[in-house]
Amino acid sequence: MAEQFEVPIRQKIFIAGIAVMFILFLGRLVQLQILYQDVYGKKSEENSIRPVAQEPIRGYIFDRNGKLIVDNRPSYSLTITPAEFHVKTVDYLASLLKLDPQFILDRVRNGQRYNRFAPVRIKRDIDFATLSALEENRDRLPGVDYQIETNRFYPRKARTAHLLGYTKEISEHQLEEMSQEYRLGDDIGATGLEAAYERALRGSRGFEFVTVNAKGQIVRAYNEGKNDVPVKEGDDLYLALDIDLQAYAESLLDGKHGAIVAIDPEDGGVLALASKPDYDPSLLSGFTPASAWNALNTDDGKPLFNRATLTRYPPGSTFKMVLATAALQEGIITTSWRVNCTGGFRFGNKIFKDLHMHGSTNVVEAIQRSCNVFFYQLMLKTGLERWNFYGRQFGFGSPTGIDILEEDPGLLPSEEYFDQVYGKGRWTQGFLVSLGIGQGEVGVSPLQMACYAMAIGNRGKFHTPHVVRSIYEKETGRILITPIQTRTLDVSGEVWDIVRDGLYRCVNVAGGTGFAAKVPGVIVAGKTGTAENPHGKAHAWFIGYAPAEHPKIAICVLVENAGFGGAVSAPIAGLCIEKYLYGNLIRYNKTQQTMAMKSDNH
Image (tube, rainbow, N blue to C red; front, side, top):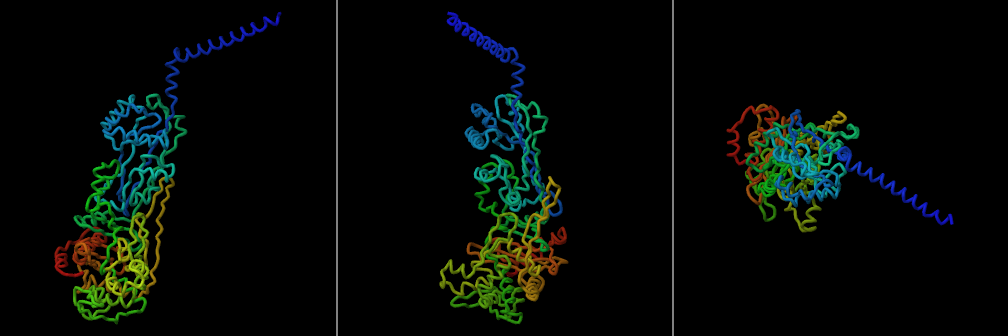
């Protein structure tokens, strides 16, 4: 009977215990939620930890004389953290930013795919009025914030657009390929030095960890900043460029289509690289309106196209030294071999013309006077493969290796090329005649031609062209010097003496076609070229170096659709040489230019 009462008593004790525990928990809940809500609610609000990205300052760029040519200026970018953003606020935010709400939503969703806790840039370069409106309405815009960033600023007169390049927002495709250092909305070098030296210039992002309340307002540094990741500024570039020469070269090309490339023959450093038409690089720094970008891309002058490194034009008579070098080095001719120039050369049923009757001419005089008939015959005597071999020694038909990641290798025809294009046995020696004077299917860039002038001026020493001389690592304090890469053409000193004599006479002796390139007090050596153009006026070329015996500058000038090289490009080259060697212009001889333009030199 006692066992029958045992079970109900145990049940009552168990139920009573549960009831007591429930009352205790309920009392604690009331205490936390009602009695101490202000105290614990505030602590809860302050419990959110947020990483605040510290964007690195992109590295500065200086010229060879330490002049700052690329600076940074502060700007503000609006960001949204996807995990904290309320979609219902998008219309209000869009009205503040004057953006399409769908654009904002798409940006947030794309950012959420990568990291929903990482801020996504929505709009760059927001003005102070917009910034103030965001601050005043922060309560209504959870997850919306702004970051202080930097945009590129160009304090010098020279634009240097094609050499420096520009940055742009990283694409989704690039983001998938790049390391975790990048995230949606980051800037990345797109062209020129900005692209080639992206890793050095960029630096690395830092993070400051802070606690924020429910409204997104910063309360304090988390853990007294002990967990912060310091930002690393980008490294600085020191260039071989002379910014004053660059500015002057650009001014000489104003209103023209063409390029000027100047190189230091002692190490291959690029002193100037100007291409016209060009663009204002500040337009592409920070936020670029779609209208501005479309205008650049639809401009008939193609201002985004780098004519210094990407053109592929026949070089005209400036290429004659390739053939002269091949024939002399191979022993095919000597200076005693002469051709009687009557103003034309018949091959088969076609007559290849010259602009003058030069009479009896040897190789030095042929370079000096730019005698086409001499080189028509010399090409047939030398042959395509020897011409091609020495052309490749000068670097034609392949990239120079310049450190701006943007160049065309050009075209240097060979037997294999003609077999492939026209069919084996279906092309004749007549294809070669025009190649002897730099016409036909040969194609070069002004950069390649400046390197060619450097090699002749250096008696065969060819330095790979480079823009950056050194990199200053801010974190370590080290200066990394760009190594000079040099090779030597397999050409004898005697041959160089003959070829260089022709270039000297071209500028300094009566009858020479490059007279307009002369500079007072300096001996300039060079060669003019007038490349025929089936689409309009001929392209004007000049290549040269100075001082002739120990060159300090090698230069190429190309002006498209301008006529004779002796009348147009030679004077420009002379002025650039004068500006670089003297630091300023000691004369501006209009009479000399007028005389050159009246002549029919080519």
